Image (cartoon, rainbow, N blue to C red; front, side, top):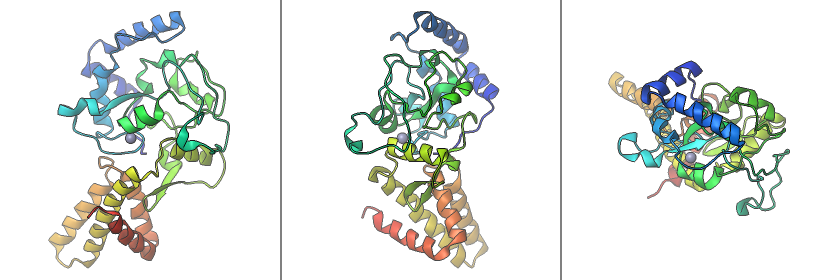
Length: 289
Ligand SMILES: [Zn+2]
């Protein structure tokens, strides 16, 4: 995961520009849900502003950081994810089969027949996610350490719930890089204990961030970055050095898939060259032949 910084007012302005009138309709819809004290299914229109988030997130999933297809022909590939589920909540890990026997490091909150209905049309409750992370894994789960608050309308103030997952947009939450880093292809908590460790541990488990469907893709990035770093070292010609430098910069850019993993590998390469070389070679072996 990486942070997608944007001034909140700028995000609102982009939404108004993308779909004039959307914000007013969203306010009306929120008022209706407030009166009903529930989310009422039907006539959803959050998809109309999807393009704002696709651009902000460089076409990447908010959680696994996979680069998705371009928006021109593949809008369906990008799902509008409600960070706080709108209609109901299931207990996590509950009866999720793959997490059978797993004990979270802290309280994770219970189930609820009510969801965060006041945030169904809150732009600060949206992110773009892939089908894997949004539909298969996130679903109606939203683990919190504290007490759920279905009445608060300000997404920023909902941090008092002590959520365990991280909202990466507009600086409303900690930078994911403060929680999760990478050793080679593996996502690991930055801290060894404490609240930030707990958030990292739950987020890694929740999104199954070390499943091979992601580690093999991260291996492609590390293998390529390793070759670019080595190439730059060995190159004698100024033009070659510039080409390798450009390649390295591209892998580290937030616009590239798995850039958080690339950044961690780059840092390791500066700090512990022999371990980085070893990991770079191991990454080559993980690639399909
Ligand atoms: Zn994803």
